[in-house]
Length: 217
Image (tube, rainbow, N blue to C red; front, side, top):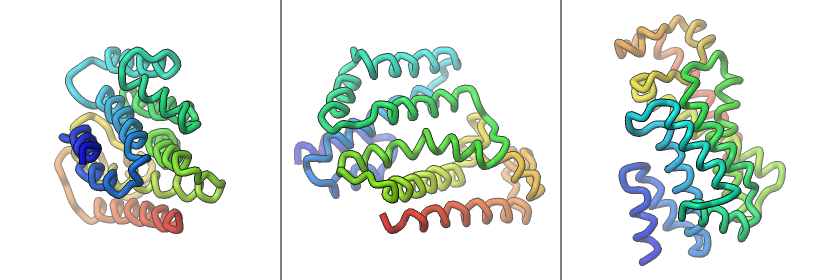
């Protein structure tokens, strides 16, 4: 149980599904998965948590980026070790940092293509890293993993619309807001009218289609 307690501890205060998932992993995979999680969690916190100005947040993310090549902090030493031991593509870690840096400077998305590009870097790398750990990386498996991870990211967006709006961000595509007759005042006022329900039903159905596309994985 010693290892299981470690994984429970690193996730306290964040996502409560992670420790459950870690117990279902083969024992030899729990440690590298925990390292990936801690890297992503720490970097995401740089972008979202606290009251630091954007310049400070970007500087911390840039420091993580440099340490992927020349680690100093213990966590980055662990990241470099699992990259070496499991032949993980370092670019996937850079992609995560690019997405978190984007969160600092970009708060609106013109269309769904822009949202998908964000998901490609914010969510899909995690699935691809896990596939590499399990030696499963065919083109079909990668495509299915991307569909699942993008769907999970979209689901997170749609359940956290109010939280993101409080941070000044709207991930709902601007052109789709307009198409459904939804304005930013809907978010500011918590207005749940027919236009809002239509917009969210559309978003949920698209996320569902992506999840089903990846289900065979």
